[in-house]
Image 1 (cartoon, rainbow, N blue to C red):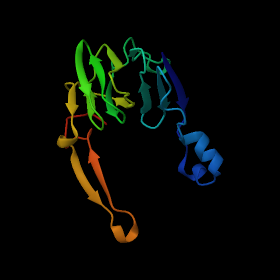
Image 2 (image 1 turned 135 degrees about the vertical axis):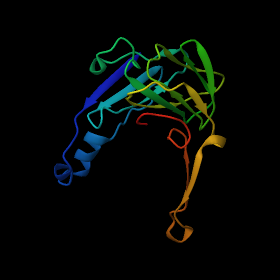
Image 3 (image 1 turned 90 degrees about the vertical axis):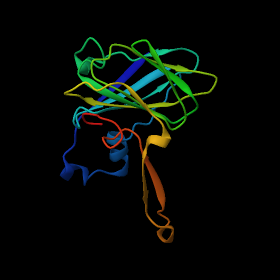
Image 4 (image 1 turned 60 degrees about the vertical axis):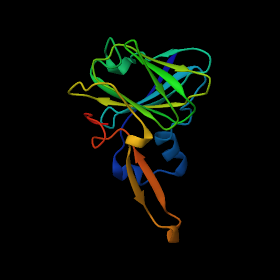
Length: 176
């Protein structure tokens, strides 16, 4: 099952006047992972889609949402998937990819079918999608292949490591 929500873009001057409650209402996606469901939020910020796939005891097929006006979800889009849970499977046009914790999968424009499944562990697949002008091949990206960026300082309690998985320095993408 796929559910979706539509959100308009907001003018920067208007956002400055928002209360905390209004900011949460317009920008927070509170139910990203819903059991046995794909939850998507389509935004007017460059027609970007963010969401989550949470397969527990059934396979979840990525279906096109009304805003796409397409036969398949990826007719004119690309997809990034990052697993923030336990190992799971993503099947792309019949080819199975096992995606472990903190691994990613890039799926290019023109793909017809994407299916998310749990294995013996519980995956949480974070999804992002953007319009694509070109088709690039599907590719799994491991943490070892990530672009690692170390930022901040322990003196300011801001030291962190960012592992970039779905960026042009690691794989070819259109907008992800």
